[in-house]
Image (cartoon, rainbow, N blue to C red; front, side):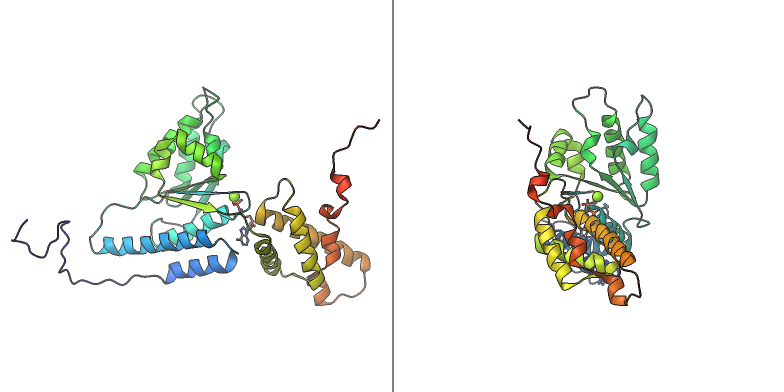
Length: 311
Ligand SMILES: Nc1ncnc2c1ncn2[C@@H]1O[C@H](COP(=O)(O)OP(=O)(O)O)[C@@H](O)[C@H]1O
Ligand SMILES: [Mg+2]
């Protein structure tokens, strides 16, 4: 132990350094408020986003005081079922990263396997590099990233794309943030076969399915954004609708809600056109039970059963 430098601890940090710095949070707080307002539920995801934002604010302050030099790894994985808000949250994450100057712009380039992998030999590298070039300075969002890896096909070009991505994730990590997204189980298998990718991802966020109550609130929120609202009976019918729809195949959380609302608005419009005459603002903005109850989820259960062979 050195007695010559009494104020420097074992990590070389000057414990008597009296410089002070204020964390600048306004911009980030604004985005976090927007996330809280616009997105129903997702408490664990919102908590993680808040933590990551705090970590980055502190990292920035540490760098300004010369306490850290390495840029942090910011690549992330968003897993969850369709319609749980992964893409929406990636857009907000890009805004946060931009607010904190971790990326030059808040743009998000969203791609899937087909944008990265070519059909023929020699096509993949230029394709992947072109996408990386477009995403540089912002966020590259790779939806259903596990499709890049096809172990069953020996000559698959996906592996080539993965290697180029890994390279960029390492060497350009101060200028490019990669977010991979998709189903949780498939993503885990993908990471097992690609440990290099797994080790480059700093934050793993899981998006839970929404409860029926949350979906109902999503419905209210999306309708409000479009300048519509449910009548009391309409909202009650929509709660019944959700209960049924959630049990059906291809149910995809908030996306199914958005699609249902589109159909309700079409039916409401048809009803008003057929009704004719003068219309009030209330009539023009209200989604009533009949719009909801006309949905096929309410048709008799026997109709949705497979046809039995007749004897
Ligand atoms: N928590 C939420 N609150 C309100 N709307 C949501 C929420 N999550 C998703 N949505 C809406 O549902 C749709 C699908 O969301 P998206 O982010 O594309 O899901 P994913 O990428 O997980 O499939 C979008 O229209 C989005 O606005
Ligand atoms: Mg998506």
